[in-house]
Amino acid sequence: MRKFCVILLLCLICTAVQATLIDDFSGDLSNYTSTVILDTDPGGGANIAAWQITGETLELNTTTYQSIEQYAMIYNGLSLAIGEEVQLDLTHNGGSQDLGLYVGGTTPTYNVRQDYIAVYGRHTGELFSRGFDGTSEYGQVGWISPAYEKLFIARTAVNTFEAGYYEAGVRNVMVTRTPAYANDADVVGFYTDVRGAGILGNADNLTIIPEPATLALLGLGASLVLRRRKR
Image (cartoon, rainbow, N blue to C red; front, side, top):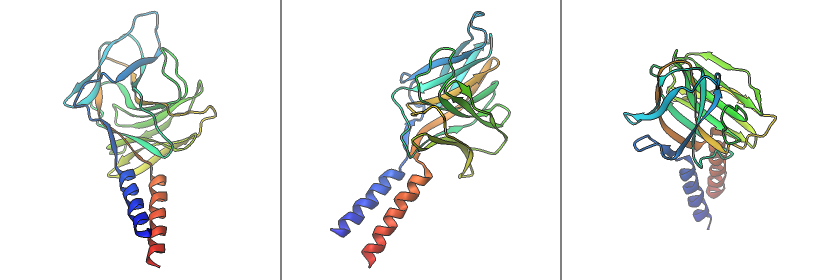
């Protein structure tokens, strides 16, 4: 019986550490909903822009620029559970301003910014994190230019989040957010800030994995069971 329990625990750990690939952009964008959450000139006409897949990566192509706009591009039905981390491969080629991850507690609505955490790369190579606690804006964290390959947002507790990046496989936390207004991480996707015509991109491999503390607990449990078995 003990042997069976050990094998079962090890199987559960192996299952847990596996990444769940949500989208590698080899298909279409029919499962996404895009919302302009900031329009700085709502009476002056909207930008002409479209999300597109090029070379199996995601881009936002603004062909006519009118004013600054920010978007939440949400993968329908995707949420972030406690102990999970959403990751994104990002190569920010061209365009003007920001592209990255978005994790929110309320469904995005037009020209409303609330209840979300974002981590994003700028076309200059810099990384930042920002967002809103309720309708109050978080202070911007960033102004760094690492040789990053991934961005992440992790939900480490019911209402606690880490945002950061991976550089050469090393996980770097830029900021920990604990909102005063609960963020249930019910909406997950992409954030953009458009400040000129051109293509913001390229994003690839939207993925969910267990965050490091969860993996550590699983590893500790396995270690204790194996020690008991050895005795």
